[in-house]
Length: 289
Image (tube, rainbow, N blue to C red):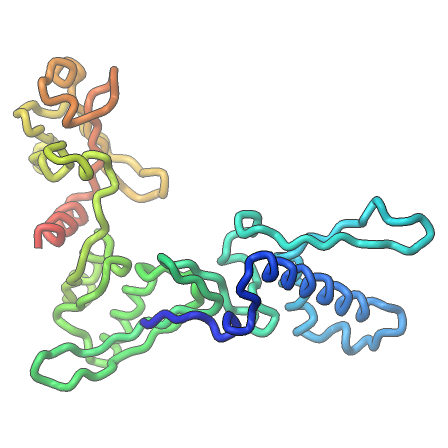
């Protein structure tokens, strides 16, 4: 997928203050336009136009209009229009962004932002053969790439063009997809795996979960210092996904000379969160690859 600036950007003021003033003018003009259709003499059929409802919802999302209490009495109702800051807006998946396209959504990815869609293109990549497009998958911009992997695989299977190895970037991979792709379709996902988010993964020499030895049959884990876990609890995490919580003895951890490389907790022993065995092993094999 390629990224570029929207064509409208070329026509907007370059200066920040000028852009804010322009947004203010657009907001005021939009409310004046909508108010005209609420007038008693406005055509009834025009009020029901879908494009007007889209415009109303767009203005409600991006602008706030309040009665100006400082207006002169007897001069009619005066409004104050304010363009909302990005942090005030509801989640992008819920918001109508453009009155011209009710399904278009806002997306920010690294240093690029846009309103519209995501297009996922699959192509062959044999080094000695022409590269051919095998599938194009389109979603609204707020749909994350990992939510598309399974649908793309199914489409490739239905077309009888499923690859044995599917090379993707990190956004299309997680532990569940690594397992499901292989089990459901015999497809091996290849690409950079999501990074380990723990602080241990960012400190040289610190003990990540990869440094622990898991004995799945006996439901025990051995730490790099040779100590064995004391509890193994299967549960659901905050997102509702199954996981395994492993605890070590505070007596072992408290006296450990390598404690600073393992946990930052002052009074609590090391706790590990493991994914189910198939997911855990698939993710760590992919990281090793």
